[in-house]
Length: 308
Image (cartoon, rainbow, N blue to C red; front, top):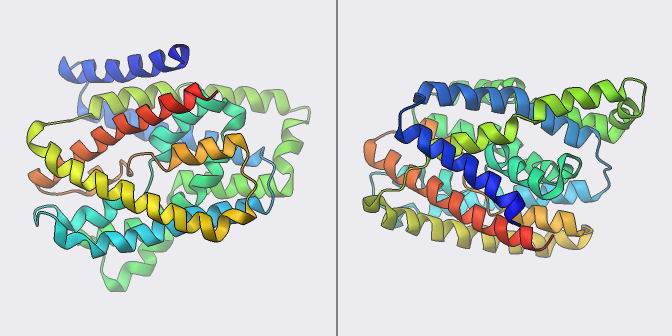
C-alpha cells in the first residue's frame, strides 16, 4: 500500500508547497489543469472505452449513475432552506457530480493500471453527460449567463465542444463496434499504445499537484463544510442504494467494477464548481468542502488499496 500511496501524497504535498512558496501562480496551475483535462484526459478516456469489452452491464451501470445524479440533484434543491443564504444556491450543485476527470482516473490508474480504467470510464459516462448538459446549464442560469431563450443552444454547445464527453462518446462507439481492439491488434497497435502511454503519463502528476495547490481548509468554514459533506454522503448513499435495488440485479459485479463504484461514488463534487461560485463566503465554504472531500476520498482509496 505504501508503495502506491506515498507517491500520491508526495505529489499533493508538492502542490501545497508550490502554493505556500508562491513558486507558481494560479494562472500557471489553471493552465496545467486545462491541458490535463482537455488534452491528456480525453486520450485516456477514449482509450479506456475504445479497448473495453461491453455488455448489457454498460447500460445498467449508466442507469445507476444517472439515477444517483438526477435524484441527488432534486434532493439538493429540496434541502436548500437548511443552509446559510450566502451559499444556499450552490447546495444542489455540490450535492451531486463526481470528479472523475481530475481525481478519479488518477486514483483508478494506481489501483488497476491503464488497462483497468474502462470500469470507471463506464461509470463516469453518465456523469459526463449530466455535468455538461443539465448541471452546467442550470449553474450558468444561476449566474445569469443563460436565459430561457438560449438554454437549448447552450445545452447543444456544451455537448459538442467538451473534449472529455466527445472522447467518451467516440471511445464508446469504437469499443462497441470493435474498432478499438482492431486498431490495438493491427500493425499500428504498437504506435497507438506508445501515443496513449505518452499522453497518459503526465496526467496523474499534473492532477495531484494541482489538487495540492488548490487545497484550502480554514477553521471558520469547517462547520458549514462538514454539514454539506454529511448531507452529500447521506444523499449519495441513499440514492445509490435505491439505484442498486432497481438496476443492480442486471449487472455482474466483478471485483474491479465493485471497487471502481466505491471509489467513484466517494469522489469529491466536480472541481468545475469553483469556477462558477461567486461571493467570498460561498467561495471559501465550497473550497473547504472540496478540500475536505479530497481527504475523504484518499482515505477510502487507502482502504481499497488494502484489498488488492
